[in-house]
Length: 388
Ligand code: AMP
Ligand code: MG
Image (cartoon, rainbow, N blue to C red; front, side):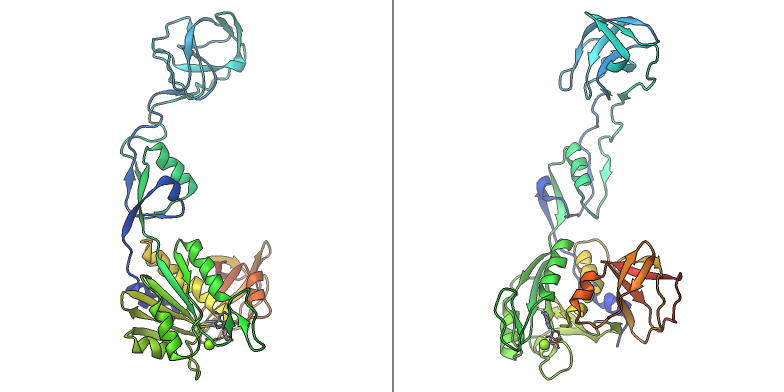
């Protein structure tokens, strides 16, 4: 048995970073920026008004000005403003030469082309200097998963398309004579393939393109057929059949097909049977079939692999810490990812930890991580967890 950290090291060694492609901004959110991009202009490109009001050279309470023109967004007033003069101005409009301050319209009484400032003036100049947001050449650094905010910034920088890492293509193969697809009518001894869909959802959320292949039955021929359908996948994930039972054929079939197997069992709970290697041009991960084990391994192993493929670096799933709201008994020789509930009171491991219980996983919003051989823990102690 190897540790979770060792298993992750093996996985990262197998996970090849993917090539770069260019996408338009409307397709950029959630993608990983592959190379730094730089602003193609200053923003604002001119000194701009931050309010609706009057642009004046200087302002004092009670002072009067003659309004000599108007500067609107998209249409500047193209002449200087002199002493005693004002230009009607609107938010986003270029500040005319000679103006040093915008007096907001609420602070002004207007009578024809004359304005008089009120006594209690807002002292803010309300001018956004040219380039105050960003300047030509300013960089958005990579790698970075692009947010909606990033997309807005890139658009303002006049960057219409961006270099992003190609989405990892993942093929999911469920294995088992007992499985049918959701919506099908199961026979008396059958159950519904569930974690397949959970993993599909997880992969999509991570930015991968996931494909669910037909369920492979517990025969070599069916598994071989399953593997023949993976096409151009970067990562093939099998679910189930990874243990040492009579019907667990994945390791043998993958080996027969030429897989260079990296490991088989990991000292963790849930999820001990786990394998990985390279099969032809793809990376392969064999997950345990138990629904919770498969999902936990999805968070602990698959998610970091997808992030590595996307160029986000080889790092374990980020952990946070919380204070225990209920005590814990000592942990055994395997790292334990306990289904837990995080609330204002702290974190509590849920009562039932069997790796088949999806209803418990569904209630959990955290995986409380117990290190190998961790001692019993009391209320108030700090523990690590993975957010779900
Ligand atoms: P296995 O690893 O094939 O021995 O499967 C372990 C347990 O997980 C068995 O109870 C299987 O029925 C169940 N199982 C395997 N694959 C799936 C799946 N895709 N969805 C739900 N349960 C599964
Ligand atoms: Mg099975």
